[in-house]
Length: 507
Image (cartoon, rainbow, N blue to C red; front, side):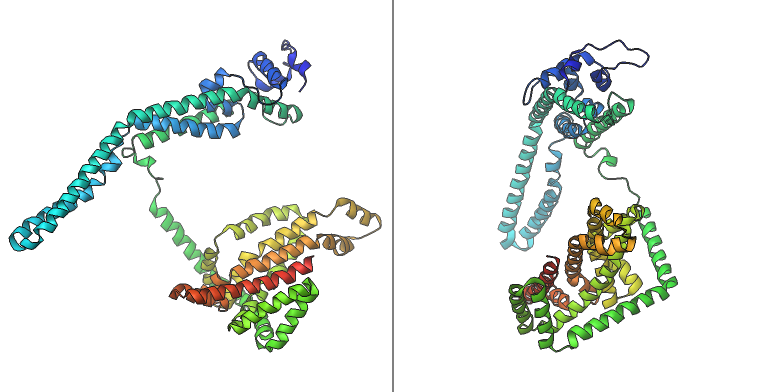
């Protein structure tokens, strides 16, 4: 920040207006802020100053000055102070405590009736009812004393609110000029930042602050008198009508597109049957040998020793067949997800408009709870393994697309320019330059897709996926802790075997 420029007096506004940067930035009181900015800039560390306008206007001042990161915490503190004072002045502090009396008094009346009846028909129960009545009366007396004590704390709440408000005002006054000076420094290098006092920002800051103060004070000061502030005024018929419309649309779509979903199920079933035949029908020594060989070649023979121990666990505890079915289910979902995800990621990396359309879909796939996927999947695909594979693909298909895009966009432009300078065409550039350099990121996406797909094993068992997830589900239903832990460790073994193979290949 230039001291010489800040030390100048504001020039007379001509046809083009003032040229002093401080005047352009603050809009009003340029001389005051010029002196404060000079004082703050001449010293190292935090320099306390006092801004009377910030003290009086509070969080509104920070919003007017575009300091929204300060506006939000300050308006929260001011609201807390206003709420405490509103509760102390208007609030019925004992009402929530006295509300507990209704049930106790109703029980007490019943005990009195029972006591009167016992004195006539069952004298041996009189003492028990008298003791119960005495206990309830003591509880009523304690609640009334507690309510009176709460009502007497009104002055303390008012004082607490005043202390919070005054402390907040003091902090606002002290930090205001420093916060504005920091924004001014950023503005000097980036003139796209908003400066001055615009009417929209003044109105927005004032409206937000006053609305927060008033609504919170009314809600906590008069909790039972303004129903509109207790809960959102929603119309239950809107939810039911929208839900009915979605249901009718899904029914119509499932009927009209039955040929498409039947073809998709046939394709998924074909891949699944082939993998199940490979994993389940192959003799277990052969399958163990291939898995150990693949692990050794990919991640090293130390990892192969660990893989052998995991395979022994799956076999000796009786999880071999179910583990292979789970691997077939996972392999089908992962193969389809990867075969679709990597080409889609290549297209998105080269066409930003396509990625701008695909990215919200990927966000939806990752953020929607996994159980919600099962609802439309059952509607369109029914139950069984194909439906479970579709749900698994939706849940685990997005990482491979995202990381493929990330890897291709991270290829150095200098390498691509050098390849094009030597006459590389687009196909050569993709296969010989982009994909090899992006391979670590793409393989990380493949790894994440496989592991996320494996995380859906238990959830997919709810719609007939079978495999290891079925054992975990049965353990939850019948509280069989031992079986559940063993099946969970079997799923963990499958995940770690796959992770070692994929991670080793990526390294």
